[in-house]
Image (cartoon, rainbow, N blue to C red; front, side, top):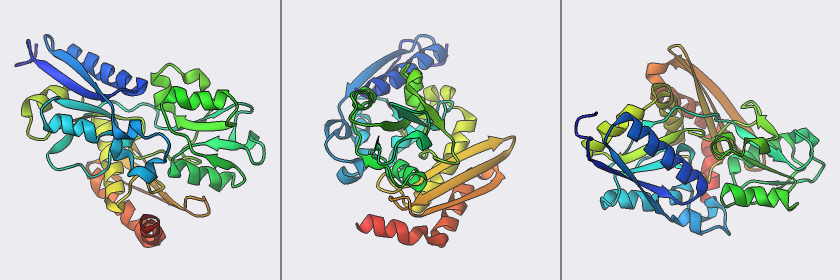
Length: 313
């Protein structure tokens, strides 16, 4: 039994979507396993990002809309931790909050789901592909500029329904979310990072809490995966240096072998006409520095003008 955990209560703020609830329940089970006697409760909440479904995330202010209400619950001490898909968490944390632990990362790749065929090359000319991610849109159009990109919001079941009812010929979703929900059989192809570099933090679950909450930080520290923590330090430093958000077609993936980290990063035109892509390698102890270095290299290669133009638009 961990010191101070017997009879203690830990409250988890979570979104109400099936995937968010799965992630929160998963974290709750891990915490109960790590700390005998710890009572973990879920506090499901509706966020602005969940409520507004008729516009793209870029149009309504970005992925941060999925977590603002959860952070308000933390600030007001109605909850102790919030559980997030790290691809939804802005690189710059609000003052007073910290991602205190990262679970071991699942498959970070994107999945292609098709009604017919099994690859991007199998889709007929002018086929309708659903995604509201500018990152996914840019990389798909770089390979298949003839495809018609259709906006796609909502939870996983809502997105799958649009594919299955024939409204779309294909959709792109994260592999990790489909696997966690037991929907892996819907995956037609796992897209290689060479074709589709993932979102920063994709496949990783993070646990957020108040920076000054030492009790909670000590409890969740037991769940932290060192390799994921290091990889995301590189990816998030990359995104923060770029000043990127979900309004920007930005991608990054860090891989660790031994004590070396390799980080690939990408900034793209939304129409796929230009992909700026670079990589950097170095000691994994310098993860954040490597992320900053890669971002500066891309900014000097034309990403600065591209991102400024997208932000002003």
